[in-house]
Image 1 (spheres, protein in one colour):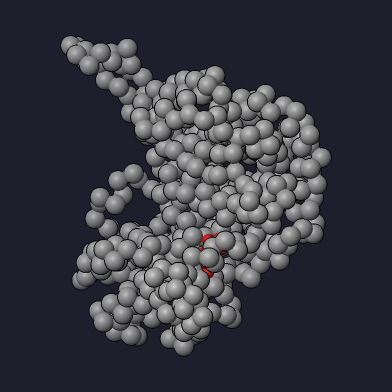
Image 2 (image 1 turned 60 degrees about the vertical axis):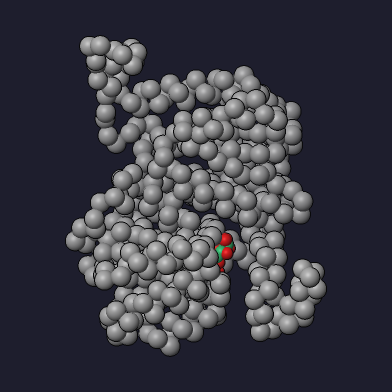
Length: 446
Ligand code: PA5
């Protein structure tokens, strides 16, 4: 089994004592997770998703994806947070960098996103793009009541119904939501959309291996079975406490660094296709750990791009950071630097080298500089940017997140802080039921 390779040797010596002290706590945290005896244990369904997903469900998802692929040139995924980031992370990682610059081809729809912001220009310009086009909608909301996707869905559903009629629109809309609760469930049942269920015991940011992530990924033409296989193999690898368990090692290392004063973790990639993977990772760790006045702040950079913007800070700024690098062993394409007789640009010393060879030396050089500059470096190498490796990586980070959150002493599976902005927004918008909050907030802003 080719697997991801975790290397902590350039991190551990920054926090040797702390790392040693966390041996037993990391085992205890993993045991609590496995035994489902800790805080938030009603949200642990993600742990067994890869081994328990049925061939029937995968087959059904692929069939729905095929229908959308045949009938649409654009499929808009409507959702926010955990209801879109996993799909976007995987689709971006597996797609051509310039995919969006090509026109849609038959049975190769473009996957677009909406409901992940409340930008009027964003939704207006999306409407402009979709006018006169064959499009479908996958609307995703576990609660079925989130405002951002609800606005986008109302606007785009109206547009679709006007364009193709209510009966045809029904075939082009798929809703993924709770089995029983929420406005989206009520609407989907009433209007007769095809639906998929987000299991009760799987929280949004842990839901990429449910239809939430799998349907959009299949619509984009990627092999969801391979993705699940990768996750399943990682599920087995990380199941039990052991000195070789990579999820346990990563969770232990990052907590050791946190305890030694490293309060910020930067997820680093050297491949722009991983940009949204970092966005998914930031949500996973930020929402899971940032609570009760605790938690490592998750940040990310795309290198070498950001060495020319954030590089100075990382090298020389406050020494409260560590980095976790995701490195892809082998690119899928080979491009070599050509020889040039005049050598006016002075880079003939690189002639004949693959671009990735240069990239790997940039990575190595950066690591040495950062470690010497006081930035601990954790490195995760994946064999290739493919479905199997991404499945492994997703499950690895999810499992490590659960362990890490328990080690930190928080409930990694709730997100009480997300409600604060919603309450104020509803009060400001005079949502029925928020009359007292409206009066209170109006008094504050006068
Ligand atoms: O991880 C989470 O639970 C959140 O980020 C949610 O995914 C996000 O708030 C969207 O919620 P919903 O799917 O209920 O619309």
